[in-house]
Length: 210
Image 1 (cartoon, rainbow, N blue to C red):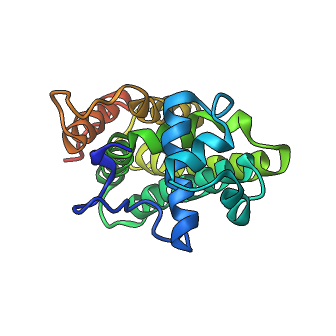
Image 2 (image 1 turned 135 degrees about the horizontal axis):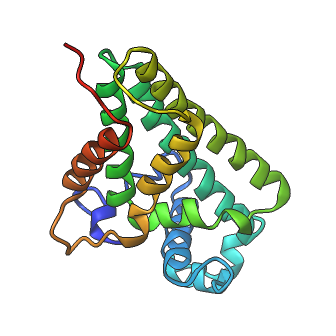
């Protein structure tokens, strides 16, 4: 996992809720492997090897490779939804809340780009039950942004004929950052977030209220 995805001292900050420590090591190793090779090309032996453990040790904490992916996906989608709901609840006009939502959402996908690639692009590898669970979280994520857009339209700040369709476009734009972001690039995660926030406000026809 890139240093951009680690706290000072090297401890990964995304998976603090995962315990015990061995389970967390395996999950971090799975993120690395899935991001580099893809879910289907990764074996449980690959994951265990990256974690410095035996393949048998993996099954003590996770019954299957798919269970690992589900845990990664669930935590990642919960975090994404938390970011957007936090922006929605903040004080201020819809334009400020939309900009904050995009800035934070994009920043997370850039800073945690390897994790985000797995979370956002391996959905079809989940089993039916787990996939349905994640799809529901994605619906809640979309609904949060739709509400902000609808409030902006009602307030006269946004010119959006189709809030639901616009939401899909906005979230797709934000999520795609995880695919191309490079820590050696010319913009930091915060700078990319600020750039996208401005871009999205232009997309929704933002008009400052007098």
